[in-house]
Amino acid sequence: MNWISFSCYPIFFIVVLNQISVMILSEVRKMHIILASKSPRRQQLLAGLDIDFEIRIKDVPEVYPPALQREEIPRYLSRLKADAFRLEMSDNELVITSDTIVYLDGKVIEKPADEEEAKAMLRVISGQCHTVITAVTLMTKNHSITFHDETKVWFKQLKEDEIEYYISRYKPLDKAGAYGVQEFIGYIGVQRMEGSYFNVMGLPLHRLYEELEKFPC
Image (cartoon, one colour):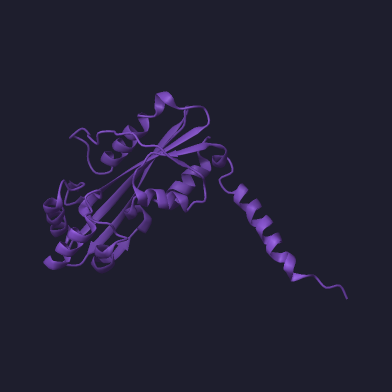
């Protein structure tokens, strides 16, 4: 009887996994990917797709025409951020930009200017259902596409001391709607969601993966 040494199995599995990883998003992996976002959450999420990328930041004023409504706003801003790279891109570069808004009762709740405005925002979304809309733009020298995803989020009625604690400790001034779903206020406040959790964090990974698969690199 011939016996197979199990000691060789780990090496075998590593080789197989490496081959599989090359097959997944194989065309995208040939590109030099640039994530144009200083958000640590987006950086963490994109890293979860197991692709290499560079962080490259440009300061683009997040100003949009007042006539724009709902998903038109993050789609416009996402494209605006990508366009800032257009003239300097090389043939093998792929830029990923994104923008997220919180939408409630026909109004956009943006990033708070200070802690007092952040507290006011949380009081507004407290006990309400709001919609988080994230738009993403993929752009190379010759092609670009913009898509968006939406998630409904139901918050419990927040207590004033919960709001005070969260704002003073976590200082979410860089977050649309003045909250991070992956932080304290999300743990205690979010009752349920309809849609992608990662979209609320700032990057709809399922959609991004699907779009990267078919993007003409």
